[in-house]
Length: 475
Image (cartoon, rainbow, N blue to C red; front, side):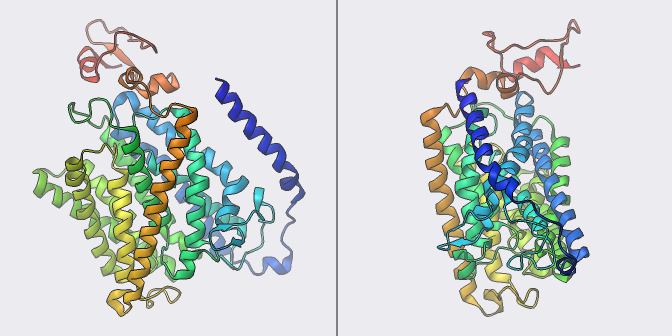
């Protein structure tokens, strides 16, 4: 409890310190001459795209929430939903300026825009000349929100909520924000090198997937993993979540054109075809390997395709998008169904297998299929005569992998000094819904008496999920 008050005190202190900066920056309405530079169509498109990206994180909550066991449904959903609030505040206070502020040595943004000081209704030509900088900022905020939420799939059902909160805040600040500057910030070293990442293959997916792998290795397997059957509790919920992700991803990728234009249409098209192709290739690969085509496989396949096309969406045409999607479905399925089972690590909801592996494939595929005929501001890839672009993409991939792995390891080690990261065995058996949040996602009743069943924290008569299911039913 003392730790909670310490954290709240630090947050309050930070707010007080930033108040003079924030309130000194009373942003006036744009003058008529400045307003003429803003394209209302582009602005509308980017704001709508930001809203689409925002709905992806609650969609991810449902996608992940349906894949865990009943006793952890709320806890898993809570992680993604809470991140929407936590990282939005972090982005407003210091995240945006670290990622996109004036460059410092090609590594990080300066503190010029701390508390969004100087970020107003006028365009910033360095990033988008036809929309208010506020529109660009809030669009990028939604990327910052969903990225750490993706990591939660790797440690689902076994991380304590206080540790999760501190990790998320530190990871966003010391991992996401710097790499976002490297790749997208004016002056960032990977951007200067020529690495292409249209909407986040390195920044979003490789960072989250690799970080997830490191965490799941550090905190260990779930109790019963490999010896008990651990099944998704609500696949319809997962499919609803996947559908929201597919829908929102159009804003994610097409919105990254930062204008209602032909490039946005091209990115929209590439996004859909890659997702569709990956859905098909994952299902058929699973069918051949496993013997049955599953709904979970179809949902996972579509997400794998969306992940893989993200870095390439604004640089490739239709057929390369289909090829990237087909490759994503096959490669990610093998990573999840074959590699993970052979190596034995417990990446609970396959954050690494889908996002880490899919993001890596997509970043490298961008170096193969990118074409200046699609986007003159990009570059040609290997198949269009520029082998150097594949080299650039490989450098971006390696840098993202190494930075994510090292920094995540350090952050978890530091957090472990001050608080417990993983739940106790007894708490894990009862489930995080009850032990971390004091709630249950579903009401139960005794199948013989019809009476409601009450669960209490600290109950010594712990029962397995299987035993509980035999004695109770949903009310």
